[in-house]
Image (cartoon, rainbow, N blue to C red; front, side, top):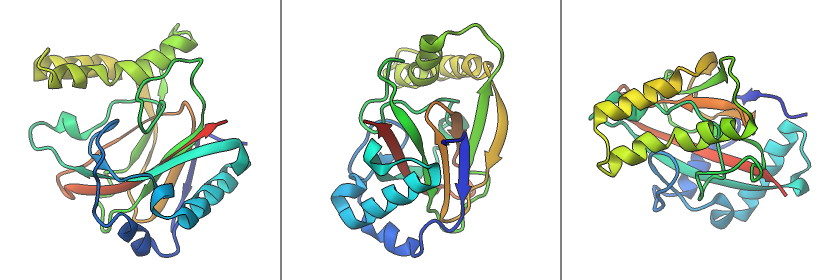
Amino acid sequence: MITDIKVLDNFYTDPEYITKLCDGNFPISGCGTGNRSIDLSKINQEVYAGVKNALCSIHGVDPLRVKMNTFFMVHEYNSVDDIFNVSSTHMDGKNPDVCRSTVDEYRLAFCGQILLTKDPDPESGVTIHRMKPNDWDAQEIVKRCIDEYTIPGEMYRAGKITLDEMKELRRQHEENFELTCEVKNVYNRMVSWKGGTLHGQRITKTVPKKLNQYFFAEWY
């Protein structure tokens, strides 16, 4: 049964080989901050199949029941304001190519990250959150936690609101949630959660570049 969160250290036997697969090439921009590689399935099908099978085994899911996207993404510290280095509390949607989703479209079985930064700042890990008591229905939860957390950043980049206005919208959004646990950044650590889990992450000035591998398993 898929549970809220799973953590496994030393996920890869040879993590250096894995990081060399993308060869520093991150040509794609899209959901999230930072650029990403092409999907691992297009880089090395054998490694991709091994990763998919391992993650499905961890979650007790038949690999034939899900399709998986997994890619590498590099994040760089933004010195303009620390708000750009801390993600809003959110649930993953239809990654990697479509950020938004409706409740009827939501098919994520599980998703997560493999932390691949050597000598990372432990504080640049993953945080898990829960909603404070409220009267949101299922559609509003999806809308607020997939759509609305992205809107302030989009409006700011489009010049429609100021930085201070964006920060106020983010503050209002964060008031709806509370922290439940934090997973520290450790090299070659896998952290995963079931679809719909609220989470966030950050990058710090201490280690201003971070490499993660993301994966998203969606029910067929």
